[in-house]
Image 1 (tube, rainbow, N blue to C red):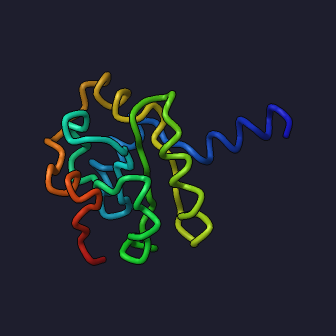
Image 2 (image 1 turned 60 degrees about the vertical axis):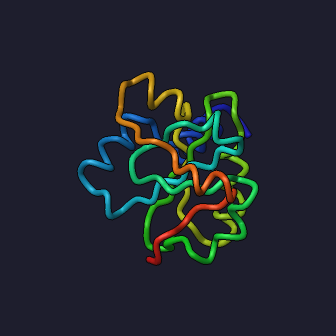
Length: 133
């Protein structure tokens, strides 16, 4: 893959925190945000409002309950984390429209966008209570 193809693919596969924030304000019904961070509750203290918490290591088990008619945006810890990218592959293989939020929760918080407390119960069970779409 040449550089041009790489950058085009990268743009197509990612969304910035600013663009996601805008989308959530203008068209929240078109997007399903998923926090795919793995880790203990003491590390995962907050999340993007209305984001589902489905750790990357159990996401495939929950795939049947995800909405096929929404854009899926995954996020993890930071630019050094690959959990969202790893989680995207099986979802794309199953027909979902998936993007990774570039920079993870660290970038979201650096921009002072709102967060809500993490769902401790979902973290304790390592799966998220999901709404039916």
